[in-house]
Image (cartoon, rainbow, N blue to C red; front, side):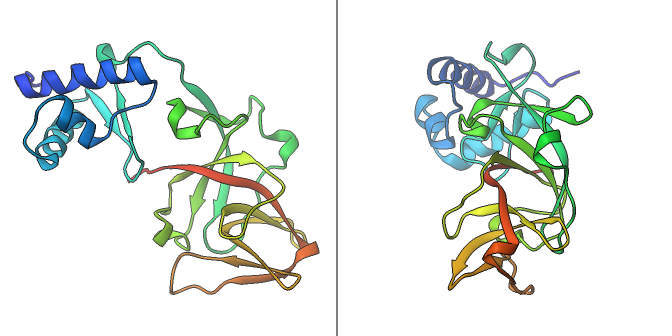
Length: 212
């Protein structure tokens, strides 16, 4: 049985629901503070943690506006069905399915609020293995959300396929003097250097769903 809400918590839930219905994306902690006339953001965070513990909402750690209401408080709005197509290594490369098999019934799926996919079409998810992107707030077991892409700007986080062994790795992408540097976000790990014609971008990261 859920704990009875305090007046402040009930007001916060009503505000979040109204904000979602009006804007189609969740409020920030500061939005809630201002909208509910709460003294500080720490008070908002404290009550959000209680509301999550009691099952009224879910929070996506390290995601801006990462609040999703649950149960009867959830406003009526479309969710995005995202296929989880396999694993990707934030460390040594691992194989993943090719692009022709991304959207098939054989894959698990996850329902996500639209703001997490940033309105991108055909977004797919890969489960991260390894810790080489830990300083980019991508941990082992997290889901990275990617839009299909064949090109990337320097510094973008991508799924890059290494042609020689047909494996894919998650790294920051840089082109330097005809070579590609696949840079981890972990000071304990070194980059992967590969000829530009020996690597291809499979997707650009648009979001992360934390699992811990």
